[in-house]
Length: 299
Ligand code: HEM
Ligand SMILES: *[C@@H]1O[C@H](CO)[C@@H](O)[C@H](O)[C@H]1NC(C)=O
Image (cartoon, rainbow, N blue to C red):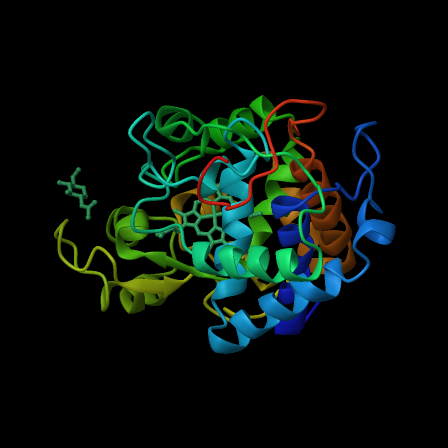
C-alpha cells in the first residue's frame, strides 16, 4: 500500500457501502456483496470516477470521506444519519463536537448520489435512517483525549476488537487535524518527540482560541499515501493526537503496532477486515428506514 491511489480505492469501497447498499461481507443475511451486479452494473465505476475526480481536485478528500464513514457507523450504525441536515424536528449530527468545523466531504457525497441516480435511477440499495441524533453523536464518537482503555471500551461497545481499533486507527495515515485537536498534546505531554512538538507548535499557538483551525497532517511523513508510516510515527513518539500515541505507550497494543511496522500486509488485511466489520454495524433492513432520494433529508 504505497500510493494515493490506494486511498482512493478504499474511499470508493466505503462510499459504495455507505451511500448505497450492499455490504462486502455476508455476515448479515440481508446484505450481499454483489447486490448491484445485475441491477446497476455501472455502480462501482460511477462512484469511483466521482471520488477520483474529487481527490484529484483535493488530495485530502479521500481522508475526509473515510472519516465520514466512521462517524456515521459509530452513531446508531451505518445508516447515513450523519448526512442529514438539521430540521425543525431534530438537530442532526453535523454540529456534534467531533463533527463541527471538522467533518467534511458532504458535497462529494451529493455528487456521487447525483451521478448514481443518473445511471441507475431509483435502484434500491442500503436503507437510510429517518432521523439523526446530536447527543448520540456526542456520546459515541471517541475523543482524541481518550486513554487506551477508553478507546478499547468505546470500540468494544460497537462490536469492534482491540485489533480493529489499532488497524482502523491506521486511517490516520492520511488526512489532517486542527490545532484544537492536538494542542494539549504538543504543549503538555512528555511522550512526544521534542523537535516534532516544536514544529507543530509553530502553527498551533498555545492559547486556546487562537489558531484553533490551523491544520497539521496526521501522518508527518506521507500525509496523502495510505501506508504504514502512521505506526512508525507512533514508535518515534510522533503521534499527532493523544489518542494516536496511546496505541504505543507501553500498553497492550504496543506489540500490534510493531507488527504493522514489520509486516505491512498484515496491516492491509486487518484494515480491510475491520472496515468491512465496521460497515456491518446495525444496517437497516426489511422495512426499517428508507431509501433517501436526497442524502441530506428524509423523503
Ligand atoms: C480511535 C479513535 C479515533 C479518534 C479519537 C479519532 C480522532 C480524530 C480527530 C480528533 C481528527 C482530527 C479532526 C479535526 O481536528 O478536525 C481525526 C481525523 C481523521 N480521522 Fe480519526 N479518530 C479515531 C479513529 C478513526 C477511524 C476508525 C477512522 C477511519 C477508519 C478515522 C479516520 C480519520 C481521518 C481519515 C481523519 C482526517 C480527516 C480529514 O482530513 O478530513 N479516525 N480523527
Ligand atoms: C498545560 O497544563 C497547564 C497546567 O495544567 C495548563 O494550565 C495549561 O492550560 C495547559 N496548556 C495546554 C496548551 O493544554
